[in-house]
Image (cartoon, rainbow, N blue to C red; front, side, top):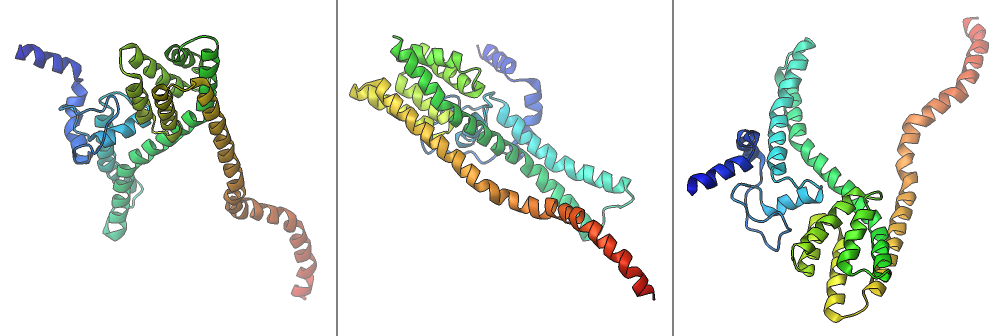
Amino acid sequence: MQDHSSRLDAEKTPAWQSLIEPLARLAAPRQEPPSGPVAQGVEDDPGLFVPPAHRVRFLHAGLRRRNAPVLFYAVKVVLALGLPVLVWWGLAAAAQPVAGASGAAWLLGASVLGLQAPGLWLNRRIARRQRELFEAFPDAIDLVIVCMEAGLGLDAALERTAQDMALRSAALADELALLSAELRLGVARAQALRHLAQRTGVEEIRAFATLLVHTERLGTGVTDALRVHAQALRQQRERRAEEAAARLPVKLLFPLIFALFPALLVVLMGPALISLMRQLAPLVAG
């Protein structure tokens, strides 16, 4: 029986994961007990050494494969060790051997860059995905309202919305499809909605889950509550767009000063300066 279970574990774990796992442990954070409830898919697993609080970030980025943390931290170690080697080889090929404080600074900078680059990529992926979820979520609520007014139940409306939202937002359609799958498997609706909020990390989706739980508990109308919530989300989306538009002139100021204005100055003042130099040249020579 033990041989059979060990053989099943070996089949579940890819061979390359066993090879890179020692590297990943060098950069992985220290395992700590979770301080609160964790999302579906990040429960304690003896085969995964990443704390649940860090594994939730991979769910926020849409990386649900269980070996994603292992690959991520292994890439951090490989880049931290490999980029200095590439820098050293490049400087040696350019006839500038690494020596002294400047060479050590180049190698240290390359190592720090390799160690921080995967984290920056993950943060950018999380921010882009959460923004996509936030912008598409009011439309999804409108579809849920239309489906419920057409006679479907809440679970069926969520499943149909997951199918129709694939063209608008693949990430949101995937999350709603996973929510519908949990409901079909018999998970309580409140728990499934809580998992949805924890997987996405979007505060508006968390408010949506809380709203549905409270309406089910209090017996109030779901469609009216969803309509008010969708309107509030749409207004919040408009405010964010207005804030981004208000910050645009400030963001364009420095590129205009350092990139566009010098070129305009040369184009506008260049002919006049050339003509003035031609007229002053004989006087200076005389």
